[in-house]
Every structure is written in C-alpha cells, then in structure tokens.
Image 1 (cartoon, rainbow, N blue to C red):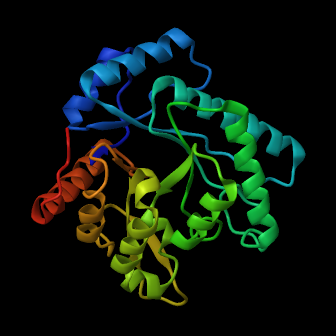
Image 2 (cartoon, rainbow, N blue to C red; image 1 turned 90 degrees about the vertical axis):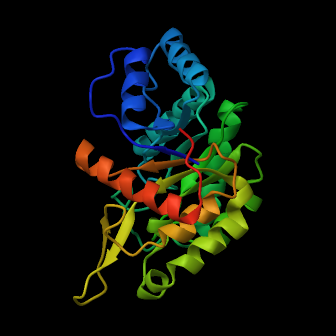
Length: 279
C-alpha cells in the first residue's frame, strides 16, 4: 500500500511538490492540480510523479450530480467529466465522488436517497460520466457512505453489476460505512466483507477513525486514526493483500502535525501486522 495525505505548504512547481511529499514520507498524493490547469502543467506533474515512483491517488469530483435542481445537476455532471478527464491525463488511480443526494445538502441524508429510483438514477449518471469521457488510464469511483448508495459492500457490488462499465471501480472508506453500534463494534467483520467482495475493484482508500460517544441517541464522531475504534489491524492486513500501489489517503485533519501523528499510528500498526507501506 501507499500512504499519503494532503500537503499544507505551497507547491509552486512539480519538484517542490515532490520535495514536500518526500519530506512527509508519502508514497501517494492527492492530485496537485485542478481541472482548469493547462495540459503542459498537468503532463509535467504526471511525469514527475511517475519518474519519482509517486502514486497520484485520486482526483476529487466533489459535487451533487443527483441534485433535483437542474442547474446544479448539470454543473456537477460537467465537473465530474472534467475531473475524470484530468485523472486520465495525469495518471491518477481514480476520480472519486459520492453518488450524490436528492436533498438540498449535497452530501447529506434524504428520504429518497436509499430507494430503487435513486439507485437507477445513479446507474444512469455514472454511465453518462464514463461514456462522456471514455477514460483509458483511470477509473470513476463512488466513495462509500453511511446514508446513500453505496452504503455496504453488497450495494457496491450491485452498482458494479448494474453500471456495467469497465472504467467503474471502488473507492473504499470503511469509516463511512460505520453507521450503527452493531457495525461499530463489529467493524473488523465489515472490513473483511468489503475486501472479500470488492477487493479486485478497489483503486484507492481513505484513512480515518471513528468513535462512538456514550450519550443518547447514537452519536458517532470521525476522529484521527488511532483515537477511535476502527480495526486498523484488519484494515491494513486486508489492504496488504491487494496491489502494493493501492493508496491509503489520510484526510479531514486540521494541520500537518495531526497528519504526522496519524501516519505514525498507521505505520506502527502496519509494522505490527506485517503489512508493507511502500515509499
């Protein structure tokens, strides 16, 4: 696996970017440029990463292509296609978004999100994005989520089958699947099921942690890796069975020091479990 995270310092050019990645000890990186970047610059970053053995994990296409607002939906679809094209050009492992929501909050819960009608809309939407770009070097993926599809390994398998596109794959965030005490206390089994059913399709993973609070009603908080209950031993052992270039990307922490602490914890668990982190 390749551990990575965001870079907080300014990256004025690819060599500076590479220096900061090496300083952090990362073997994987988030895409360092946006969809409006000129082709020569994109190519320069991609070539620098390849020559240095750095894996560009993902291009984020964070938006709501399921919005009931036509203008928002069309803008999101266009952005997803541009992001997928960028991932293909720069050689990223995947382009990632969530499926989207039928509610006003793009990443929030809505009564219509976990319905057969929305499942079918996701299928049509992802097909449209992939068919509009026809990527050759990357994949379009949906991040697992607690209250929208894909919300389980089984629903992800159903999407893979229904979408029926070779360029559609899996982005795994196990913390986002922990949405009940049952899953919280048995998250090692949830993780094993994810890798058993989705392993060959996994292109990138997110690294976070989760903590169940002792107050009513059920309240789960995302926390820094090592401060929660996620079974990182199982997570890293299962990840270690896949392609050694699969990225494990830390996210949502406030500063560089927090990422240093998170990386230290993940590396310590990997060493204990005999899981190899490639740098």
